[in-house]
Length: 242
Image (cartoon, rainbow, N blue to C red; front, top):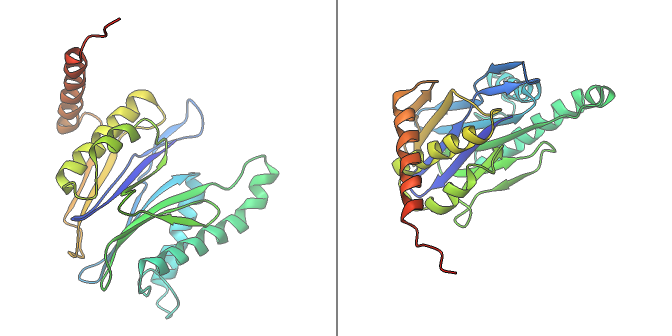
């Protein structure tokens, strides 16, 4: 399973993804699910992947291949808007789906690769999208400033209560990490390392990126303080009157 979340804010964007993959209860591994395309001063694009690892890696590989071709064809480096980027991601998802889909169906499986895609290209504001396995997508906005993919239900309540479009990047990063802590407590198929990235609006380069591995001191403290705080708030709730 997977848990990825991306948030669009007035001050920029926050992205986070876990690294656990599994092909059965006894076959767990770690793979980075965060891909960054960065050209300083011009654009920053971040993709968080969910679904079949083979499918998502194939899509990313195709995007990289087209970006590195240097033949003047459409790529993440030539796109003028984030909407154009989403068209390129959609084309890649459908191309891999058409290539692999029939073989997967023959073995009783289905093509499954979805993405959270966000960033900023010079000349427009930061934008955030969710791409589905069929190649269609939706865009985040002021009313819905965050998008999730994978095992989203355990982390959503805290994000719903805390994050708004004007929440600071620092506070959002803490909230997102708490949502990962809640998710990992309830679902063992989501696990560390956690990749966290903060992008500041109009900066056009990545300056804050961190990986939280098992036993990370900050994450342990965050988890401990959050659990203690929740228990204290619960104890302070008014007594039920019958």
